[in-house]
Image (cartoon, rainbow, N blue to C red):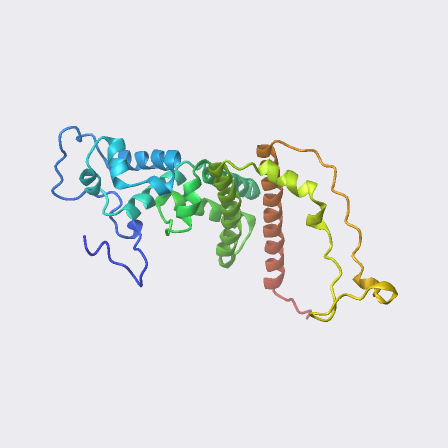
Length: 281
């Protein structure tokens, strides 16, 4: 087991890179009442606890109590809490509804992936934190990546641009969904945030007049340059106030369309750059 706990340059070695993600320890003999215990049940219970109580309260003892077993019984399946959290992370990605592999509109498929990614991040606020801490190369996470690559190939992105496309799509949904999940976890109201922006014209007011010379007062009176006069603040726009979830959905949908439009534009630009020049005979 020591080799499994080995660190590489101070970093953890992912359980998915050890070949031990589904291996039970040799010599394991279940105690009375533990015969039905398996790794799947352990991971499912971990996800339930993370959803209900958050990362901060999860411990191997708390998990064992939830399962009605001893903590040592859990350690027959995983060496560390880190390994357990990696398994829980990929378990959450198993909830993704991936697009079909047999063709389809590339933009619709990427749109589906982004919405699904955001959905699990909001449903499981702890996922965004774990995805930023662990390598996240479990089979379900990689299936999501493969689905995105297939759609990007159908979009016409060349192979050398696929990683760039992935770096655009998933960090976008990760950031939006991660913030949404955290707000939900804290009980914050996204709608209140939007209303506060609309009710504070100072948010869009140009900066006040400043002196061109540091530590010198701004000239006043007739000598004050016109360019330094602060214009009047615009009135706050009179926009309808939507329910918080509708506002979040609308903002995400708009931003996602910008992402897809940008991807299509870059595809066309790359195609122009690599198009061979034909010299007239």
